[in-house]
Image (cartoon, rainbow, N blue to C red; front, top):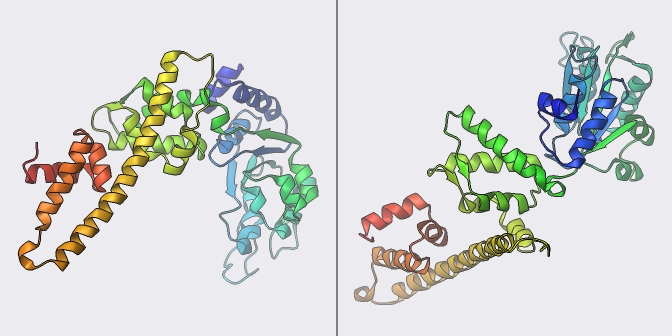
Length: 368
């Protein structure tokens, strides 16, 4: 099977050489029973690679059991992994198989392996070495045939150095290591993922897929995506849910990007001397948009302060000099509309109200 066919079959999106290299390794190790350690930041797609390795292995017709070690309380993790006998602890009213027995003949995917308690790590190491264990409360050894794939977003070597992870288990798990790079280090994959997310969300919600402008694609490609693929997917789905025009433009995405990251990272986009003048112009536009957003926030704070000053002044004046609140509100809306040159979305942002509320207020006050 070719790399492209493997990616299509198991839903691994990306044409970057980093992803292709990882896919090549995954295809090779899938045919063996060797343990695999998958590392990378949260949201990069570690579970997708685990599913692909299992699906391409001789165990594909058996169970792939996924366990999030960080989501199971320490006190019951051993019972969940190895099972227990009736009466082995309070509340154990019947015998129960653990994940190892459920995955017998197949693959056990241990996500967030760095969160596993040290006492449980000892027992996991024994299973890896002997393929046998005992249920809690049992005196009988249970043998299993399970392949282990582990994943973590932490530096396990650092965890070992700080005595939070066993050195022997670390070396046993990392027989083969796949380090999935963050999305910001393979920006070319962003524009492969975005259309897929648009298509999938639209189909699942029976909507016509919106078009995305070239400028919006450039914005997505240049954002650093600290939440990686998961964040990209969420931003695109939210932008479609809020969209009314059938077109996703720059304004569709900027409000959904974390302000600090958008300011710090997009403002400092790298400039490559061999880029076209058109591309550089677009980059300058993006920077200007971010600066505008920051200015609008500053103006909102000033407007809020002025509003408080007006209210305080009105209270201190005599009753005959009090300005009606409706008049104050109308003036604030007129100022925002004039300042933004009738850009209602930005005016609403500056006023700290929703666009829908602004439309209603404009109608109420007869402002065209």
